[in-house]
Length: 116
Image (cartoon, rainbow, N blue to C red; front, side, top):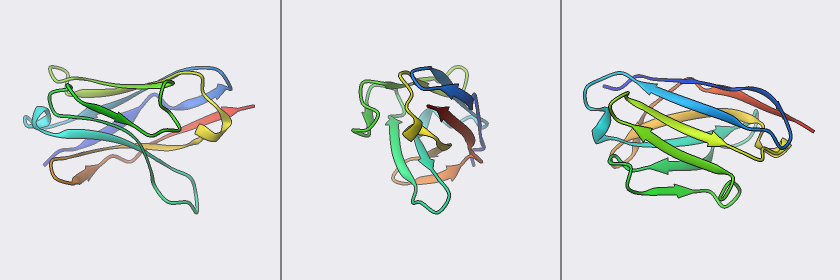
């Protein structure tokens, strides 16, 4: 069992930056891949980025490639999402998820709002 808590969301102007954190409980955190997803009301969940258990492999949605960076610190049981050059269309609730073959554990999410 893994419990995830996101933080770092907020209101930022277009072109600004935010760093989201996903803090996990449990001693098996380093064995899980971690993904970031985002969702707006009435819309489907959108994949943003993920990172392998070791941190060696990362993937990004085309919409954020070159602007967002995912990283992890397994000693701190935390995954980060550095978001730069934010755009109004990045506005959403951002959630992190943990899993091996599939994402089985989800956090509650943190709101990111980008004003134009």
